[in-house]
Image 1: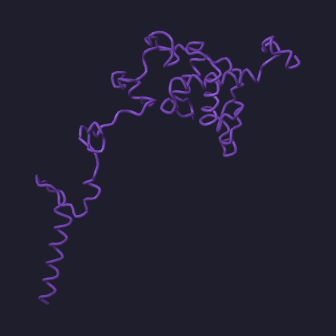
Image 2: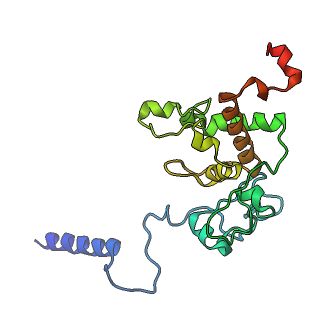
Image 3: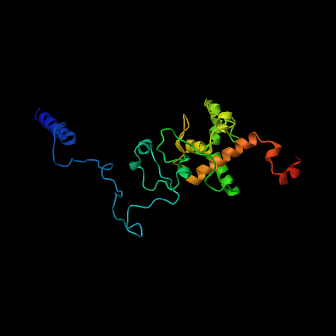
Length: 222
């Protein structure tokens, strides 16, 4: 029997040592039997490191990184990252004015030069991020329709054809409805490139012989 009490006492002490007295406060550090997740070999802010030539653990942002601004930062601009693109309001937001008006006022036109290289860039980004839902021609017949997503609009609808360039840009940045935001995935130039490519798809779907430059009509038999 004495062995039973000795074993019982040992188990009670072991449980108390492992579980502790729950609900009691103590200024002593906790006893960690398995501290793998608590004591991790990682760099902390402002730490030094011999791994990098400048001896800093903090690393600068990768060139081309797009600052991410969430909904709370949109409401309170002072929370927005300092490196957010604000040099040109229309270039970075698709909006015109100083933003003090209650209703958003989107602009028209492109604040960057439209080149063949930019259109190719827009095509590549469109096929990566947009075609899966909107289809390669912008008709809303992407592969997601086969899985029940039937609400994707066509860029050839009158409503979207009449949408301003700045609003299309803004939808790309912030998303709308079931569409997510792509502002954290695309640079400012890439967003405008996709906007320009969407306009090209709309023009291709509703073009007439008069839209073809005269110098090219003869070669196309027009």
